[in-house]
Length: 227
Ligand SMILES: [Zn+2]
Image (cartoon, protein in one colour):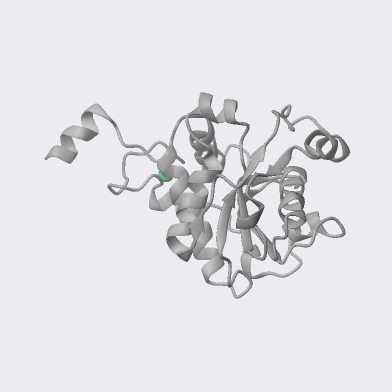
């Protein structure tokens, strides 16, 4: 009864399609989850995400859970997460990614999940870091800790959307700083974010972690957007 009343005042809608045919406590309906285009990358060595980092940084394994397709349920869900305050969608997407990793033997022995940091001012305006929510979902499934305070973004970066790969790399070079190197040294780390396109930001952040002595670096994002 209370739940039904709550639904009148705070309609609980699927982040992917807006349907109200959704289980309590879920952010995405079963129909959308079944339609999200899975990549299968978690158990696929040399997949397209891993190739982004070839010859650039030492990555143990990398994957994305879904292909980012336009005007689709996955795009709507990520938009809801990033711009509409739908935090639950982030946690749920993180859980899905965690399950994909759990099925593979390429994402074993990870000790920490680190979300891609946002510039603090930006996080304050948004109210949260969407990557942290994804990290929380992954943590829950893989039973490893999320650390949000050991690496920071030193200055804001312009949006990467309209930049070439070289410009994107120059835009983010050296913007990340490990503030607690002792938490990174000798650790097996999973770095996570919502979407990977060229991988420039993840590369720059991963580079900072590796320079601080991170033992093995894994990368996992919810979606992979082909350029
Ligand atoms: Zn839906």
